[in-house]
Image 1 (cartoon, rainbow, N blue to C red):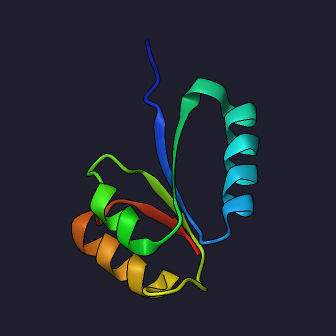
Image 2: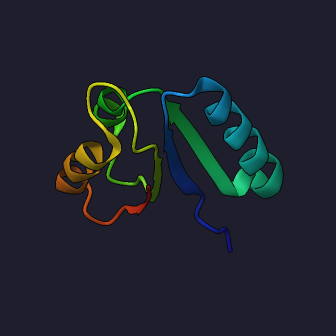
Length: 84
């Protein structure tokens, strides 16, 4: 039986943090996780899918902060789990 891959979004305007976290998660979980990265809330919202399972959000971002982005994501995908 094949397990379902976790679809994870990382949203942070700190590109180094995003790259390091993605590298760690891919090395730790391998093919069990699909990591998509975004440097702002707007690009995250454009690419959001119904099968996005988890979202890691930075609170301090330009344009839309993490809380504003979280509210908009919840409108599109109420089942996603968030880490802010």
